[in-house]
Image 1: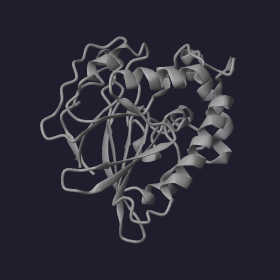
Image 2 (image 1 turned 90 degrees about the vertical axis):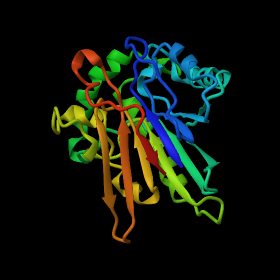
Image 3 (image 1 turned 135 degrees about the vertical axis):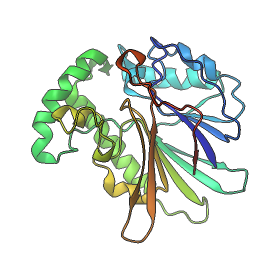
Image 4 (image 1 turned 45 degrees about the vertical axis):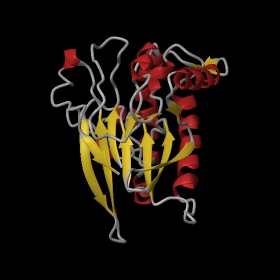
Length: 258
């Protein structure tokens, strides 16, 4: 299946006109499309199915408990499918059945291990203040993000290891946050704040043939080999912010084979 991947468009402030790519069978929106949600209208009547995984900025200034069902209805109104701790099986043109397993997969602040968690949580305070979100009426602070992240992690681990029993041929994971420190932004190096962008889900990679993510405003396309001889392709096609020079090298028409 040929996939067009877009994320971190930030249409609430950026000028960008998404265009369907010839040959694509699916569009994946991997989060931070538009914090106002208005930009999702641009994907209405898209010529191929559209799967959406929310990003952190989809919840700016919102209470997650209210925003999740509202965002789902908002996407559905444009014919888009939001997946959060859910799996969807789609059939490719060649007949292959591809299972897509999706979650925002919030950061658990342990990409540097338990010893680095305290520093990572302190660094994460800034990002949560900018986000200004809530959960069940309480501040969605770094500690709350970690609790949500661990729930996402538990769900992903169970879903990715679910026996196939002939129901699909391959699995593609979609998360907003990165699954590995290998996806860290090379401009900054390994800092405590990196744990607000990357998770240590390397042990889960072997259960997916492709892992798509966003969040970091840079592009990645690398392959991770596993002891059994298989490998996982990890791809991010994030656009980022033009004023920071992050859009240089952004190629929205690149297709990913899954």
